[in-house]
Length: 152
Image 1 (cartoon, rainbow, N blue to C red):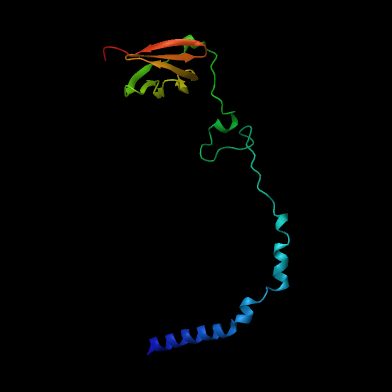
Image 2 (tube, rainbow, N blue to C red):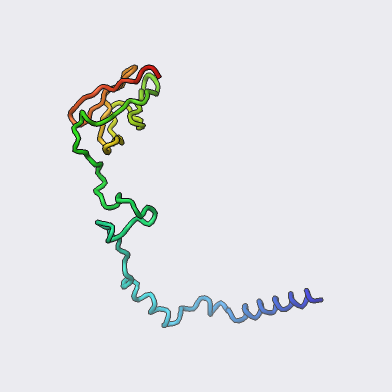
């Protein structure tokens, strides 16, 4: 009996709403007061994002101690000469058609350039040639042949 009463009340509520929402009121234009709300759409302020130049101007919320946002994004060049930079050939891999050299933990193919991490900072290195047991790299204008360590 209670279920019938609740169904009846719901049906009555729907019918009364349908009677109020006649097709003429649904298709009619909105009142004049609502028309003026879109009039100032061009007055909405635009968001402006400024990249901070130092930590006082702003920080990365995910890495607050990082200085990455303030740099130019270019790799840091050390003042050491190319001959004093520690670069090691960790291994060789790939097929005979496409050889790969692992240099300081970074994989390079022939004629590929990358910023290699070293104990003194990142250095731009270009892999010139990959041989069976060595790799020829270019640091600046200096060519260097890196050989696999033997005995391990």
